[in-house]
Length: 161
Image 1: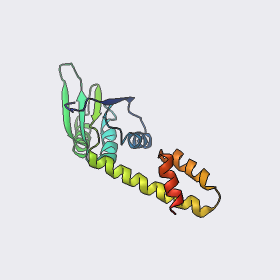
Image 2: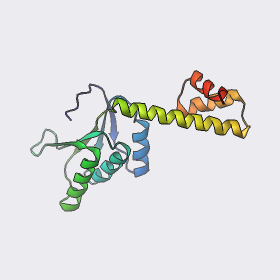
Image 3: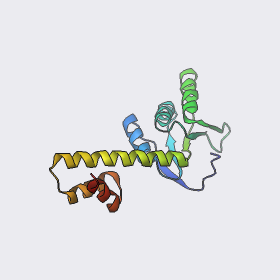
Image 4: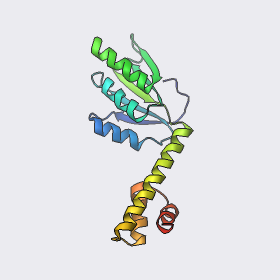
C-alpha cells in the first residue's frame, strides 16, 4: 500500500451492505492501524463511496491483481479514489482481485472523534438523569456500556449534572 504504519487490522471481506460497511468503518475509526479488506471488483466503487463518506480525510490504496501481470496500486484520498473507481466501473468495469487498504487516523481525527464521543456521552447522561427512571449507579453502568468510557469518566458525567 505504501503506508508506513507497521500496525494493521485485517478485516477479511468488506461487508456487502452499505449500512454494515458504514457501521464496520465507524467501529474501527479510532483504531491506530491501517485497515485491510478484500473487496469484489463488482462492489469496489460502492465500497469506496462509503469509505469516502466515513473517512473523507484518509488516504486509501486500491491494490489490484497483486503479484500478477496487470498489478496496480492506486493510492489517493478516499473521495478521489471513489470518483476514479466509479468512473472506471461505469466505463469498462473493474476486474481482478482487490485488497483495499485504508490509512490510520491522523491525530486530529482521533481528537475530533474523542470530542464527539464525549459530547454524545454527556448528552446521554443528561437524558437518563432527566428521565428519572434509573439510579445514578445504573446510569454510570449504562454510559460505560454504551460509550466504552471509564468508570471515573461516567461518574463525573452523572454527578456534575
